[in-house]
Image 1 (cartoon, rainbow, N blue to C red):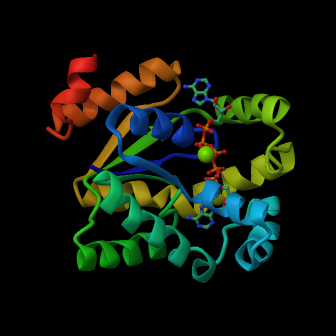
Image 2: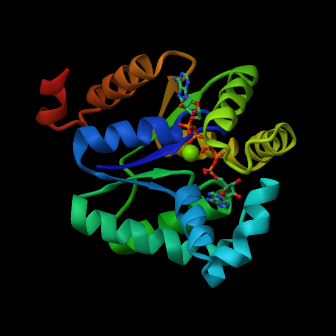
Length: 200
Ligand code: AP5
Ligand code: MG
């Protein structure tokens, strides 16, 4: 199974990606987490990307593509697929990822598009800031991340809808309800293995 979680900041990419990975055994790959790990290890990539993450700006593709595609290829080989979270998030990234997917026989099976009203997203991120203190969860940077999402990432919904693989799910529900809705949408398309269906 090869999935992409497409959602705004606070939409639940990480929450649902992690749950789905636990349920299926397929690796969850968050581009944001991969970048924060580089920053944490103080690698050259980490030093180069830190300012972008702190401001809520997108990292240039040349600092990101190698990192994410290597992780995706490894995940596909070790766990039979991947759940991408936060990558691709621009049309040029999606087109290039599609070319790489064609070349390596690793095209996406489905894109889970999680939607929720902006005030809900902001409240979740501000709540998370109080608990975890992620550096980009400040009111100003959250506002900017949401704007970047609207301008650069939201158009991907049409891109994947046109390719016939977009599954939109209302994420303004409890995490359990969102997980159940994702499972139901994937099952409708015949994507789920019997093991996850039996757990329900
Ligand atoms: P990234 O780490 O991807 O951040 P983001 O897109 O802003 O998304 P978040 O991680 O904040 O939200 P999420 O959707 O994962 O929600 P979560 O499940 O955590 O990217 C960070 C930065 O990295 C970017 O700004 C950019 O600089 C760079 N970057 C990353 N990818 C890039 C790319 N492809 N190209 C260029 N640059 C890139 O949930 C949020 C909170 O809400 C949690 O506390 C959670 O517990 C809670 N919650 C979740 N679901 C529910 C629910 N249903 N009900 C109640 N609470 C909920
Ligand atoms: Mg996340």
